[in-house]
Amino acid sequence: MKPLVVITGASSGIGAATARAFSAAGHPLLLIARRRAAMEALGLPDVEIAEADVNDTPAVAAALARAVARFGEPDLLVNNAGLMALSSVVDQDPGLVQAMFDVNCVAMMKNSQLVLGGMRERGRGTIVNLGSIAGKQLYGDHTVYNGTKYAVHAMTEGLRRENAAHGVRVLLVAPGMVDTELLGNTGEGAVLDGYLAYKGSIGGGLQPTDIADAIVAAYSLPQHISYRELVVAPTSQDA
Ligand code: NDP
Figure 1 (cartoon, rainbow, N blue to C red):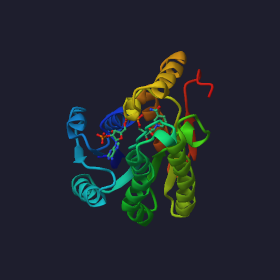
Figure 2 (figure 1 turned 30 degrees about the vertical axis):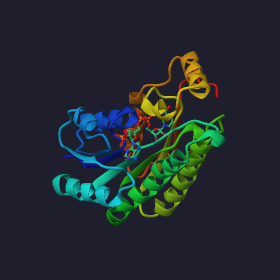
Figure 3 (figure 1 turned 120 degrees about the horizontal axis):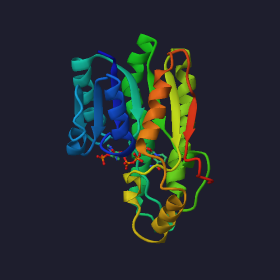
Figure 4 (figure 1 turned 60 degrees about the vertical axis):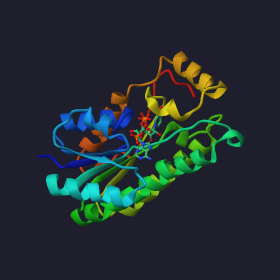
């Protein structure tokens, strides 16, 4: 059996597509998200499902231990879980400010800590962090989300440097617009309407499978070769 792949935010969108892609390639999986039913509905074989908040480190660690007992040590962690609530800061729910940093940034580092020690000991392994084109440039009403993704980009490069000499790859996949449930946390109104109008004008965005394919391609390289950063966006996206 191929090595264990761990994917956070596997209940929808890019995470679910990535789970399907690695399962099709013969990997056992640990899938982590809050909606168990959506992960079960994927119907994949050799899967450990963890119904957990990505910031519940003891729950994630326990799920990882269960998956390791069944399938062996993890060779890939995809830090994909993410939250985007677009708004001007003055109008933003403070709870969502906190939640975006907790999910997009804090959990990414805490969950990387759970696998890094073992990967270093084995002298191999890969961590893929989901950044965004919003980690490279600013957009209106994206201030907090932009901040989280700029942080993701900085921390991914820092983590890459820390682990390069240990043979562990750490890389960034930064999508442009992808058609997923990510907009679900942006309330109705002009901000959502503007986003949807632009998305429609460029053909609706990429499919989650397009990003999953990029993650599989990056992982499939020999361990001594690493893409450091993949920015994957619709050809028609001009911003
Ligand atoms: P979705 O909303 O479809 O998926 C987000 C996933 O994150 C869900 O599986 C959700 O699961 C999970 N999640 C959110 N909060 C938590 C939490 N507290 N604990 C555990 N899991 C959580 O969006 P995408 O597939 O689009 O997003 C995936 C990643 O891609 C994100 O990091 C996003 O920022 C990034 N991205 C997306 C782009 C796009 O245009 N769609 C563009 C650029 C980057 P559940 O609700 O079940 O917990």
